[in-house]
Image (cartoon, rainbow, N blue to C red; front, side, top):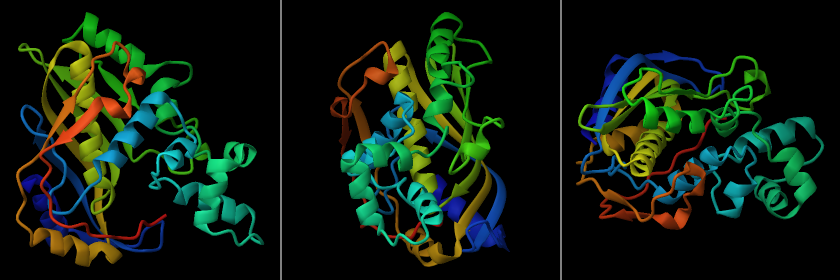
Amino acid sequence: MKEYINLCQTILEKGEERDDRTGTGVTSYFGVQNRYNLEDTFPLLTTKFLSFRLVLHELLWFISGNTNIKYLIDNNVHIWSAWPYQKFSKENPSNNMSLELFEEKIKNDAPFSKKWGEIGPAYGKQWRDFLGVDQISELLQNLKNNKFSRRHIVTAWNPTETKEMLLPPCHSLFQFYVSSSNELSCQLYQRSGDVFLGIPFNIASYSLLTLIIAKTLGLKPKEFIHVIGDAHIYKNHLKQVKEQISRVPKKLPNVLIKKKYSRLEDYKYEDFELQNYEHWPRIKGKVSV
């Protein structure tokens, strides 16, 4: 993952300090592209531990079209809890419920979960129902029937509904490309990227999505290309990022997909196995909401 280390160094060397929506402050650099090989390795960050379990559950959640965090909480995934919790706290200022209790109620109280567990019509909603269009199903059909098309695109950025989303999509549009050798590549445009916490997840998630689609269609995975608009490091992550840069990347792992289905929504957590993951110790950082 030298590409990721180079990205961090570029931002630290060339980025500018800016205020941001969260009030944390960032060092920001605009317009980067990195390429990750998918032919014989899987780009899961090695300069700190990154949970493949979390990446996989989030991706399956997106693919399902679900926008309620109950599925994530039920599977001990807490990466999306802060945004519904923030909304609940703002609308109930006299209620001092902790995040932990909020998550317990999401898990065990169905009416509470239905009302407060939603992130709005983001990601999976747009993938599976963009103004009535199931973009994932259409993508698979188009890849099967017209593999050299330049229209293999899925967009999560729906201007008519962004105001209803707790967090408008950061990874907003992706496109697939099939080579004459039946190799599948994916390019993602990400409008905004938290380089310490978010970007490693995004790299792994869209690489995994490419592997899944390649498996489904009998193609060979080739490359994930990641284009980021505003690539930024939060000020409270500078120490952690510098620690990562000091670490030598380890050999990348592989992902085994044990079964093949005709629909992406049929894949289950048990169908995947991460193999040979060597990594440095975990580095923690606070998410800015």
